[in-house]
Image 1 (tube, one colour):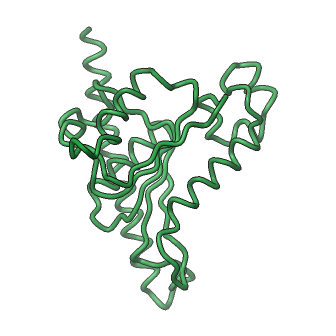
Image 2 (cartoon, rainbow, N blue to C red):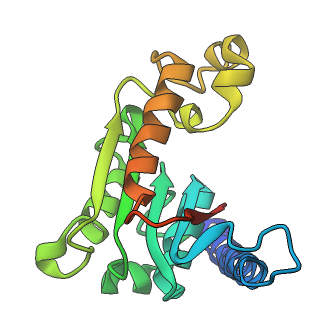
Amino acid sequence: AERKLLQDKWRRQQLKRRVAEAIASMDWLLRNVADKSTRWYQAADPNQLAYVGHSFGGATAVVAAEQDPRASVCAAFDCWAEASGPIDPKMLDTGISRCPTLLVQCEAWVGGAVDKTLQAHLLTPWEKKGHPANLMWIAEKAGHSNFTDFPLLAPMLVRLLRQAGAVNGTKCMQATLRQTLECVRLKPSGFNTLIIAV
């Protein structure tokens, strides 16, 4: 029990550091988008900012988007969120509702601890715990590794290690990216959405 408490504390500290790094990365990109001397000048719309991440990166994206008032949208693939962490339970209790969030989840996680946490704290706008535009999309027959490049680069190895579901890895990634792009395309402008992937 003591080891679990230490792990949860360490993971919450690690999440704080990663959130700070993600927000600092957004700061850097925004400075460069506004600076005529950089190759990033006007490469993206500074009013359309998104945080996107997978697993621990999904938790990082959700917390960064909640803390960074500039974020317009968030997408999290198999966001690691349980009652014990790594997202601070106090933050979960008050709700994750600052901006719309797309939660992409593999079918293998449906009904588990993470699913229950996400349902309770991000998808309950009627209790003011989630943004009214939050969505959850379930990737059928997918496993946790389907949201990484592993199924694309080493499909046989991932299947042998049982790290992906029965779905075709390439098709799953294409569908996931399609859902994500629909979510982050906020409004037509002459620029792209600026995305921090964590």
